[in-house]
Length: 234
Image 1 (cartoon, rainbow, N blue to C red):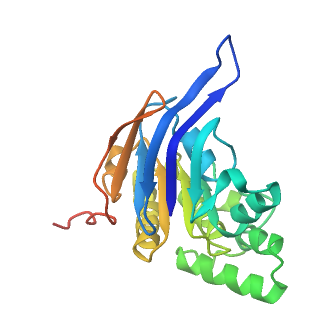
Image 2 (image 1 turned 120 degrees about the vertical axis):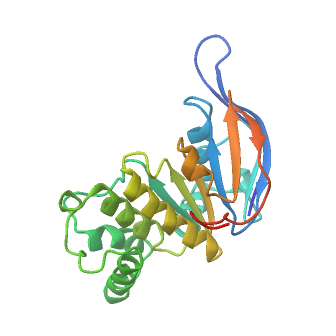
């Protein structure tokens, strides 16, 4: 699903620039749940932006589902972000003036779905994340955990193959964090590829694999595999 070879990213500044990534090489299989961990400033979010086609490496290569990102036009990158990749952010990024249903409908509207199909799909997704009956609530009327579940439903709207989550539990209490993690684990169990940046070691331990970063490099990639056992399982 993901193949990165010798990824470097250097931002402009000072005499030589600031290196955020220093030669990352790794792959992620379809259906894996991978947690990317490490201290602040180690390059985690930079890596996620490159995987999400929001940024480009300074050198090295990135292939998504067999497509070379460097060969994509701007329109092709936009289409890939719309149809192949779902994004979940720490700050939710929901529109407060819209209902939960309308927030989930947005990607479907951009994809040109008809109104009835769009609303039906949004209803189904909100029910899937446990928010049936709250479709008309605005984000300001929902708890943090509920807002993040709306954000996950929105990320799933166009049936992406890859879900990128940047600190998805960073603003949540422990109970809501577990609920969100259970949803992400369920998606990976159904075959979706999930890459999650997190500082929470307990949550990272539930992923199928950890990639630990330090100073722009991979410090310790763990073994490959599907998501590990749930809490309480052996």
